[in-house]
Length: 279
Image 1 (cartoon, rainbow, N blue to C red):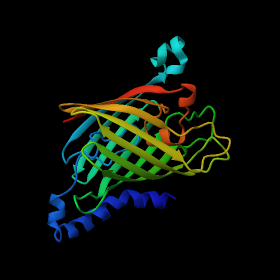
Image 2: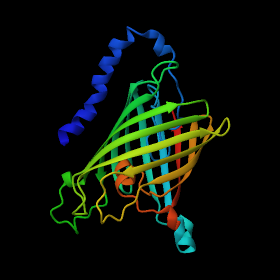
Image 3: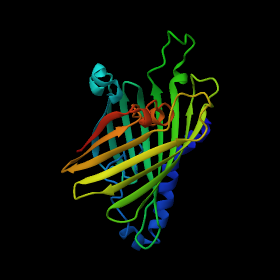
């Protein structure tokens, strides 16, 4: 399994070599790439196929308040919040790297373009995404034999998007993730999910964003749910401000894919935002 995830991290280097060879053959397609399927690096929780431009540094603050169902007792979600601070850097035009820290985990990731949607040509954009999370929530007091390796979770995603018009873009994301340690004894360490997301442009600056992830082999006794998120993007000059309601308080991939506790049917949702600033 570790060899599989190592291959996922090396895949951008292999794909870039192939792209260099193809670029010399077909320069017309390169000039007709479809751009701006998504304005944000994420749809809500799900990564989009957008990458940071080469040399661009993004500073991102992602925040999830507590559940609104707690009412006044939890100050309608203002208590028990989760905040992630993240830096994203465009190392190459085709390769983005990032590092993040939240109350729940450290998270390091790469995202890389494999193929681009071309007008009157290739119909979709395909990007790869890999991440390594270090779980902060496991307590040595509960697990005396806990090792650093037990805290690691690996995630691999294939992000496939299509911009149908100036208003509508959709994405699908087959996903595999592996938790070295799982507190549920009947849950497989290696898990599978498929994400769905979309963006609909409402005006020059506003868009409606929705994403959802279906877990495909969750343990029958699991308390966790599939995450559903609905929100809006606001473009304001040098940054994008994303506001949303989501059933996941976890922000990193391993958190929202495998450990979502909220339930829209019970009003157990979290208000949050992603604030992106590019330098």
